[in-house]
Amino acid sequence: MATKKSQSKAASSDSSAMWKWLYVAGILVASIAGAVGFQNDILSIVLALIGILAGLFYFDSSDLMNFGLRYLIVTAAAGALSAFPAVGGYITGFFTAFAAFLGPVVLTMAIMFFWKKYFGSM
Image 1 (cartoon, rainbow, N blue to C red):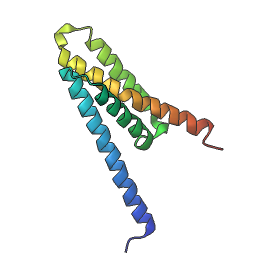
Image 2: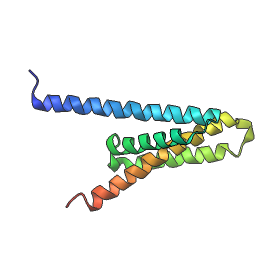
Image 3: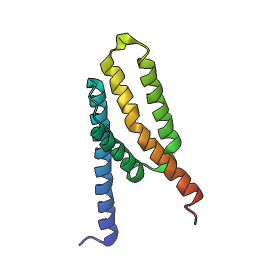
Image 4: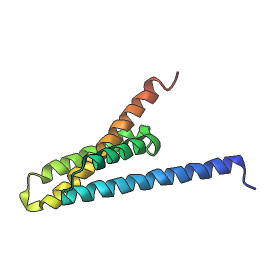
């Protein structure tokens, strides 16, 4: 019979795996939709909600600096690709949508970072 500690650890890893795959699915859906030029308000809201939930429940807010740097690199790459028409609309759309999906994740991580830093010790 499993102990309570191992049961809670297993439940935690199942939840973490769910949020990880939801995050990966969000990246893929947003990037592919951006590459083909598909735009839908409902899809944008759902993807933003997935990004916010992934930022809350999957990512550690103490890793904000590294994740924020990755976000800035992807955003800069997306902006640089738009300057070269030879790259094509597909690749530019892919990276632009990828950066747009990461925006709510980084914003949520930043809010959680400051919340834990200034209000977490209460």
